[in-house]
Image 1 (spheres, rainbow, N blue to C red):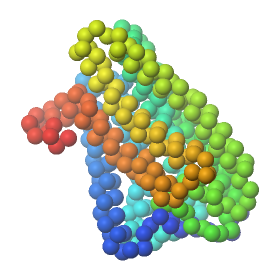
Image 2 (tube, helix red, strand yellow):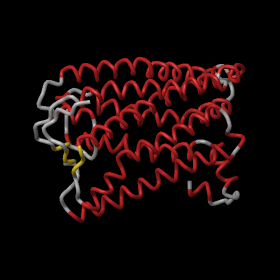
Image 3 (cartoon, rainbow, N blue to C red):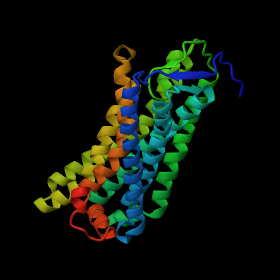
Length: 313
């Protein structure tokens, strides 16, 4: 692949110049990263060791935790290095690799959330057929399909960027290399890249979002028709955590990537990128731990049944 760029590095301009502020951000993001790693690894360990959680719902949650660890690890370690050393540059190839994996893991997470919505639909709306509907073969297809489609999507959007010319400026307005930021810096025509990005995002949206929306419309409708208050409470408790995560992720990511240029704001872009790229992977295990009774019970059992564990969670 021929590199036609006239610059060989980018500067991540989202890093503040004040040394004290950088030190504060270093420790803040270090704590966030450690919570993300420990929280998601704890969820994975609980699911792996507790036989009661060996169901499709929790296997999806296991893969979601893997994605959250990968997603945060793409940007946070580099951010921590920058805050600590004030070395704001990232090579052209390194920027492309980072952008590729942001697209890959972000897209895979969207499909994983969609698969989890379908799983909850099958469990709540068709409980008698759940064992046959969500068998190992279907689960493997959903997970494999999520990774395969995301691999193609990321490749389709990354390869054309590698052929763009970047003559300067080379200031990336943020903490990481994201596709919209790179397109803004190119000194050549980016119309084809924008068309490819919008078209591929629209196709993915049509594949992933309608099943999620329809699943939850059917789930809510089924819950409302349940006669018993206790049945409604139990049914809603099994999907409320996932609904919160979907709302957080879809809301911020879609607004960041698909809003019009007229609504662009450097500060807003940074806040949104931190929200869905850094905070959401940290919040996911906390949300599932707080809202899911089975996970809390498994955690309590694994950690020795101490009474203080629910309060710590």
